[in-house]
Image: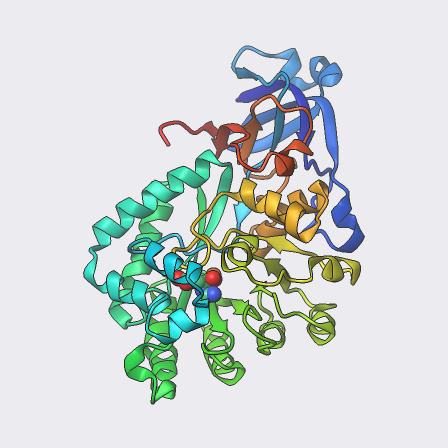
Length: 419
Ligand code: NIG
Ligand code: FE
């Protein structure tokens, strides 16, 4: 048993856990000042104010417990990062220079760069090297406080390549303490050799890749990049019909480059989330209302590519929930630091700290189908929690955008070290 005592403020506590937080509720965050937290066998079993600790069962019998003192520090749920591509072959800083010189993300992609560049490199790299590199990135995001992460395939774009990526993700699930969900993203880009016969690539995804991936249980979710220059809504429908019939829940890349119809397709297939959303208008907001689909913005990609920001405030004002993820990938968001995402949320999208924290905890847990077990400090949830270094208030988290405010990370009830 682990007792964390003298917590300056215990943040994002829930007596009755909610599956997600919507609209104006996003501006509130429940906290306990001068608090304690008890963890037993990986699960949160109790929390409250220090003044009540003596009358709690742990307070009365404090023999068999490990005690940590969190004076001056905040304790909160670890970040859930519901959208990443953190298994990738190599970084793409030469395209970064192309962008500085004026080329757009789409222009780079049209020349066979971008995702196709990563796919060429992926074919040359061994599963072992992919794994080791990804382990390094997982260590890094844990140090920044991430406790759950979704990872996509999508740099294979061949049967073998996609399976290689999903096998690496499976090994990461087994080897690391972080909670991982795997997403099959065979429909990330049309390979050059299929440019004049796109439907053949969709056939390959639908008839060969998806049945194998589902049969071998290599993925939890299925994704499509439904946007201008990538996959059309009709192609997306074909892929999602097949995915859903095989038991894979959809999560869609949508409306990053245009009003692509991706949000509507995602909603109509009951997608867990639709992600990016720079091109979201009234129609898209209407489609999202009343649905179970989590609108997810990816501030790192919009910042890196200089895109116009998604209308986050409009979505919240319309009563929608909002989530934020890192999109960690070598082409449009080369960072998985969720503290930076929280800061970008406030600086660019004008989210209050409370809205930002809801967007990277409960709402991203929902977008990974993990709301029952993660995303808040609630009795019965998995003990993936972080302890900050001494900071004046939780408002400091988005404010101090350049430093790591996380001092200790606890995953499955154990203090993580060696990462
Ligand atoms: O989410 N938008 C599509 N896919 C990724 C980018 C992947 C890449 O450029 O390597 C994204 O931003
Ligand atoms: Fe992405």
